[in-house]
Amino acid sequence: MRVVVAGGSGFLGSHLCEALLRRGDSVCCLDDFSSGPAANTDPLLPLTGFDRIPCDVTARFQVPGDVDAVVHLASPASPYDYRRHPLRTLAAGSRGTENLLELALRHHARFVLASTSEIYGDPQVHPQDEDYWGHVNPVGPRSVYDEAKRFAEALTTAYRRAEGADAGIVRIFNTYGPRMRAHDGRVVSTFVRQALAGEPLTVFGDGGQTRSFCYVDDLVEGLMAMLDSDLPGPFNLGNPNERTVRELAELVLRITGSNAELRRQPLPVDDPVRRRPVIARARAALGWTPRVPLEDGLRRTVAWFATRSYESDTCGALSE
Ligand code: UDP
Image (cartoon, rainbow, N blue to C red):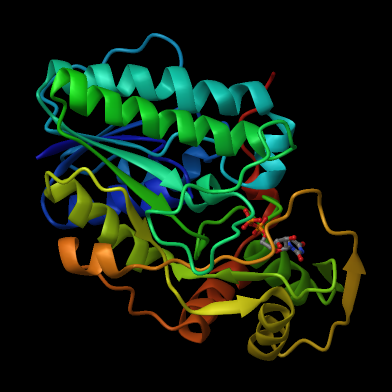
């Protein structure tokens, strides 16, 4: 297969590119390097079967050659990024999705949309299965991401129904691992960076809010299973092992051997109170299940961060 990975130089995208190459697929990575550094995929450039086209998927772009599958991971995805770049985030979910669906349709290729647990908003049903319609504030600070992804799901579904596109949707829950940007504002990267630097860990609110953290290698296996199927989904992809933010902070302190303090900061507006995926559908339909326990995944993540210089974490300047 030749797989177009939009957002292929990002955190998830670069791991997916590597995994596809490892199993013998060819990969065409599209990225504008706005939130995924080129350094993530620079080491892949000499490899046979890998090419990289610097481009913005919300504008015009060309993909020469065969295309058997397209996966759309091209979007700002951390709350810190999408709050700073609201219009780009909306464009990534709308025009970006449309352009990539058209590309897939022209080539009769499989299309996979990387949607998100954020489409459930601040959920009133717990845990969340795919039949839950969500609880999203359409004008809140997170809406640019949540609503862009909801629109992207609607568009993907419409292309499948009206155009016969072989298109499917996965909803990705909090994922962590090597190559997260140290300054992307997310909780795992922030806590690990702070703990390694001996700085206080910034716990928002009382730290009683929950998330369920999936290690990146597990998530990539789920993405590949979805690429290989012809199912529409949507399927939740995430690890149902739910933890409070405070528990996560304590675990990071233990793994890093840090005795830094926890420092409380105000809870961001519309921060979801709890989140945990039901993954029975992905298990049954894709034969997928996450395997890496949080402690192991965090150890690997800490080991990676410990060898980094955070200055190399910068991306291309974004303008709104
Ligand atoms: N959070 C925190 N301290 C930080 C960053 C995040 O306590 O320095 C909290 C945040 O309020 C949220 C959770 O950690 O409840 C997960 O935040 P993240 O930005 O990683 O992802 P989200 O699931 O909110 O998109």
